[in-house]
Length: 77
Length: 125
Image 1 (tube, each protein chain N blue to C red):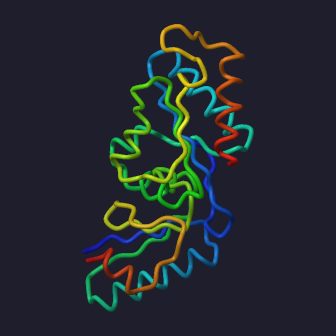
Image 2 (cartoon, rainbow over the protein chains, first blue to last red):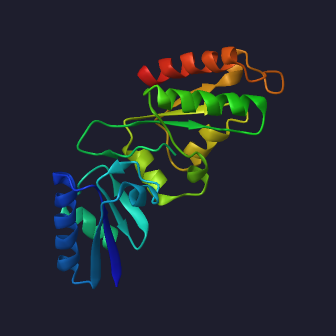
């Protein structure tokens, strides 16, 4: 199961990244869990200083932007 | 790493990597980067994370509006770390170019100020 974590304090871009990530995961038909990490200190544990960001199985894949679902699919493959 | 974290909804962040090496000039680079961060000129970030290939640090660096590397000596460890991590678009300050020679440049207010002034020029250019 893929562990998907959306790093961000809850701004519209963070919400959009969560939507796009979930859409990508569903399109791929993979098993996944999705978690929103909103605590700034927890976000910084990833070495991330800008949000939104996406981590897949603990590895940060994108920071500071909201890729389209098709682009996120490649990050989940 | 700096203590602040920003939302991508706002403007970009300028990152400052200092070698923070063991020599006197490494300490000057480190102090200059920290003071520039406090002054709001940019944000010091963890140079060791580049070498460690920490995904969050690499991706944050990719997303940065600008990157400045401050190397204390001509070994240019930060510059090399950035390049080996695949980064090419960054500004570079070598303290030897300011006359701060390794082993002969004790950390003083004057030496830190000299480094800060040039670093600030590069960040803003």
